[in-house]
Length: 219
Image (cartoon, rainbow, N blue to C red; front, side, top):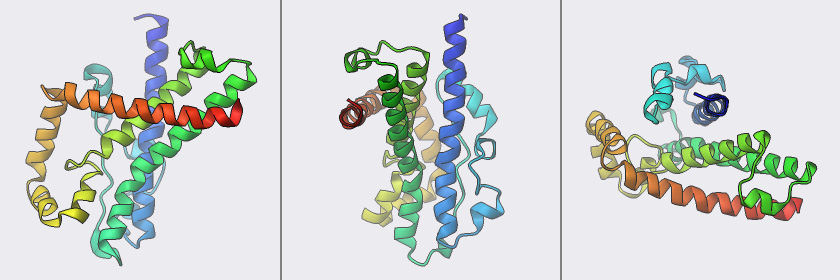
């Protein structure tokens, strides 16, 4: 393993810890604000990534290219408006990743402008080490947002089904273990190519949009 590989894995570890920690903290924060004490009682009302990351699954990211983290447990029985509050709580995680991607884009653009790096260089992805970090930071956070918004249990996007088709969502919850295993098989098995292409396509479009908007500010 060369120096660049070590640098890449170092970047990846830092970015994932920050991004996952803040993703789960966003879930915990909004659930707590909606009067659910569960995240606080379980010690999850914190951006500390080590309270949210499953270390075994985290290291598997570097081995098999896929990992998992400990989802924040919530109790919608405490919510005053259960469907709305649960939906907001669920979407808070992906929204946090989108915000982080936007912040990363602004910082990358600001650095590039400060260093007199032109837009053409950024478009061609001819990065120095700092720009490489922010490019990876943006891409990972967009990827986490898009992946978690898939309408599949137990991902955050399935809460949309709970609003549109509550009976379907109820059946999903009744077969939670089976669906979780099926999702892992789909991601790691034959369906991985389809999901990967979809996520890459959407991430690419979102990246281009953020790039275009940010470039109007700095260039």
